[in-house]
Image (cartoon, rainbow, N blue to C red; front, side, top):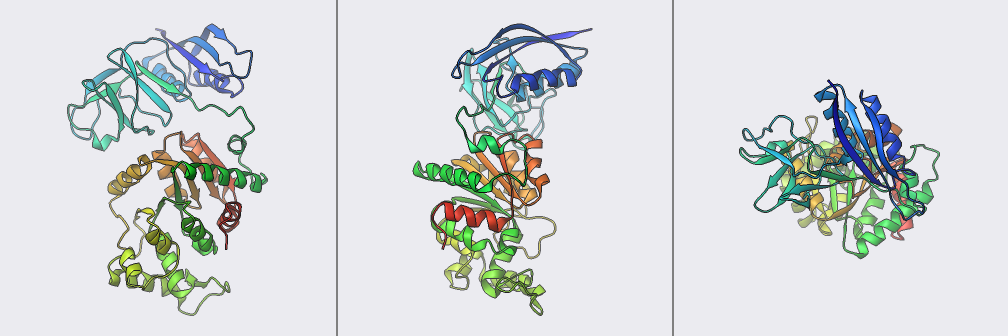
Amino acid sequence: MTLKERLEMEGHIIDSGALMKLMDTIMDLGGEYIIEEQRYGSRKEEPSYVRLQVEAPSEKVLDQILSSCQALGANLYDTSDVHTQAAPRDGALPDGFYSTTNLRTEARINGRWVLVEDQEMDLALVVDEARSSARCVPMSDVREGERVVVGHHGIRVTPLERAREREVFSFMRSEVSSERPKQLAIAEIAQQMRQIRERNGKILFVVGPAIIHTGAGPFLEDLIRAGFVQVLFGGNAIATHDIESALYGTSLGVDLATGMTVEGGHANHMRALNTVRQAGSIRAAVEKGILSRGVMYQCVKHGVEMVLAGSIRDDGPMPEVITDVIEAQGLMRKAIQGGVEMAIMICTMLHSIATGNLLPASVKTVVVDINPATVTKLADRGSMQVAGLVSDAELFLSSLAQALNVSR
């Protein structure tokens, strides 16, 4: 038995390659298609449109095709309301639930399209028919009886548009390579940061301990002092080694001024941890004058919202480190929804992937790492807005501080 559905796609779908990707996706998943209507824009401002009929050999294959096609911005042709079912219990979803993308999404409720709130990938879509509203909700936060969207009807997803003007972010989103001209990209990133701050938008930095190990910490401090960092995500390591650096001048026992291993320096990070734990917290260490420089010091002094999420390998940890991963995830989500417009992730694969999963596609996202695999991994996991730079932390942050005219 052959199952059929109609899909439509509109926008700059030819030059962006979206239409070709849609056709390839249908065939790769075992389906076929027939183009029923197509209109191509004759000028650069005009969108193109295509309607096609998709055929699949089974319900399972059809569902896979529809899910993948909606992630590309192709939507069902019909205009019925969303279909919902009650959540069977707290933290569980009905079978056939709709899994969200990070793209701008609308749901048809009571005959009208409404914008989905708190857009994020891989969540459930919960509908309040009385308020004619829909929002993305983590599976663990869904409560028994809430109306959860099932299937694909009544969902409209808007794909990311490729900028018509020459834009470095579009250029960076092409093939990742260490041979890309970094200064051009960094200058564009700096310009975007200025524009965001002019309208009081927030910039998120997601950072790993390599920033301290490479000696790039002072450049991040410059950015914080100049008001270009409103939110910071990291783990126990960035806080510990930053404070080790501030108190002892070492990171992982290596003297940051000389690059030489310090006798007994391997224990300095534990001494740093103990000092802060004796003080009660990082903030208390700053207020008592124990900590007078470093990234953590600048974050406290300049009111940067920090979420430090722990892991199983942490020493200590620092008092501010959140060891409950669900709690940390919730605080990260809340911080992002508080107005973050740009995210810059530097040399931290796990925190970058975690943050990428929480970001809506509208947030400009830059991933910087010396390892190209880290840079491409987020895009592979669905964060299609990611722009990547293969670079070490010190080169990137020093160049960014210089481009923003905040370097020492």
